[in-house]
Image (cartoon, rainbow, N blue to C red; front, side, top):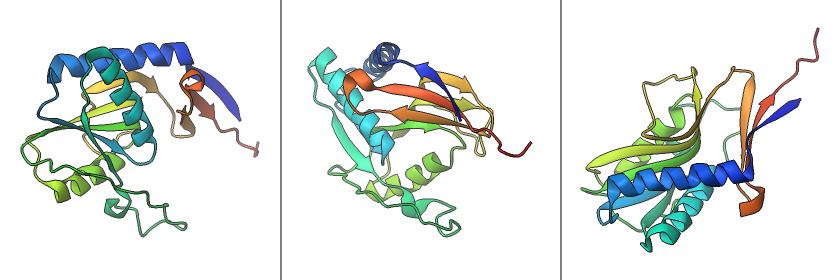
Length: 182
């Protein structure tokens, strides 16, 4: 297995600040905006975004955590079912602008499932997508993010590992799986 660092902690911090400035530009006071992190890793990114927005603007954004596991089209096809995470949506999104937040956009299936799950909390006026990493050339569905931290050209055999743990150790890696068969 070979790992290549895509975003080091400093560059990830700069990228996060850029994404937050784009959100501020488009949502101003966030009065009619709800930030929704897709469980599990999008929720970690949401917390970083919300903290950064608080530092930049002094505004506490309305946020929620959404688990779309049971809305996935491959839920019953997997040998080992995905572990369900907690949905925590203490807000109705009816008539609001919603920003879905996830770490990596790959095929688009998770985002489609999240949009289906989101409808249980009302019909939003608008839905936008913020991703830290956009894996290009791998979409199964015609989806495009509104806010992108970094676009990466990847092969199907490669994986993107986003480490969001402690602020100074946050990193993003591109992993090449080596084939043992020659």
